[in-house]
Amino acid sequence: MVRIPPDAALNARLARWVAEGLLDAGQAERIEAAERARAAEGADQAGAAQTRTGEAGAAQARTARTGAAQAPAAGTHPVGRVPLVVEALGYLGAAMAVVAGFLAVDQLWPDIPTGAQLAFAAVAAVVLGVAGALLRDAAEPAFMRLRGVLWLASTGSVAAFAGVLAARAGDFSPQVTALTAAGAATAYGIVPWLVRPAPLQQLAVFAGAAVTLAAGIECLGDDVPLWVPGVGVWLLSALWGAAAHRGRVLPRETGYVAAALGLLVGAQLTMNLAAGHLLALATAGALLALGVALRKVWALLLGAFATLETVPQTAERYLPGSLAAPLSILVVGAVLLVLALLLARWSSRTGTPRGPNSESNRTETPRPPRSPRAAR
Image 1: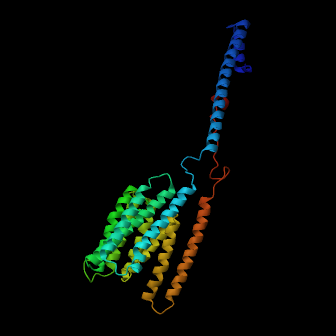
Image 2 (image 1 turned 135 degrees about the horizontal axis):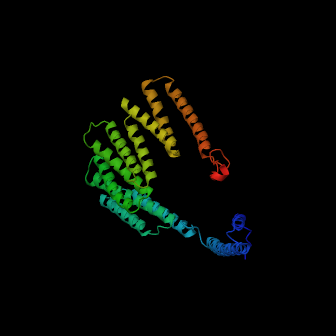
Image 3 (image 1 turned 45 degrees about the vertical axis):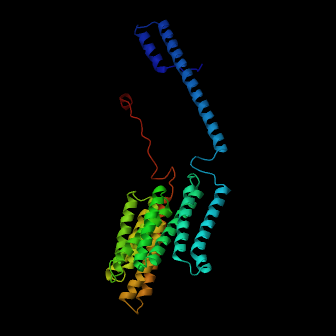
């Protein structure tokens, strides 16, 4: 039994009651003994419950350590040699099929008829698409990467089939041929993208949609200026980025990257106008600001590349034959270097873990309220 120390407050009350004649000494002793026995019984019950809880926690800890030693962590999958070998063989087989279909055939069969080209492209599209669909193990990352590559090659085969059909069988213009090939690839690429929202499938659909839009605009007339398709691609990229931000385009990060690339390409196509230079500079600045705000390295790299591409062209156009172009490159490089140093300092300040005794994590323990008697 747990030994209970005497209750000074109870002894004081019992002594006062005996002095006032409310109790005699024997009754006070019996009350004190009964209260001490009751307190000891409650302490024994609490100690037994705590002991049982500790034993159960120790057993659970031993079970967890044993399970962690015998099985991999949850959410992880052991990478074996077989999936990697399958992935490598799949890449090699797809590459050989594409090379044999589009390069070696031209050398071995110089006067290959249109029907044979269409047959090769159709067979490649079907075989690569079915091979990607047969990889159903969603728990193995190597198989999922191989599936994305196979479906991307299948989409390229569909584009080749549509392009050959439009150019050689239909004898269409290059603009109509590009529109047909890109439109067919976009329509076909949407299906695997919906089945498995992978980065490669999204990039294929975005590239096909951008080429389809640009080729469609060029098909409106022979005198369509180049900046018109550029504006179309720029607007499509902006809408794509907004859809990715709202979660309508998955994966979201791939949507951001695709939109940024489309913005840069569209802005470059508009640089035959004065407003196009402003648009390109604004796009580069927006990418730099986005990289700083969201701490995205790829956005900073794209913004720096766009700046190095745009600033010298602008300086050469408006200040030809002067030192403006090299000076602008020097200034841009200095600005980017200063920006990198500022980002490094900001990252070191915001990313340094604070210890338990740091000023920002130091909290004051609240004091219990004082009783009226203690206050007096």
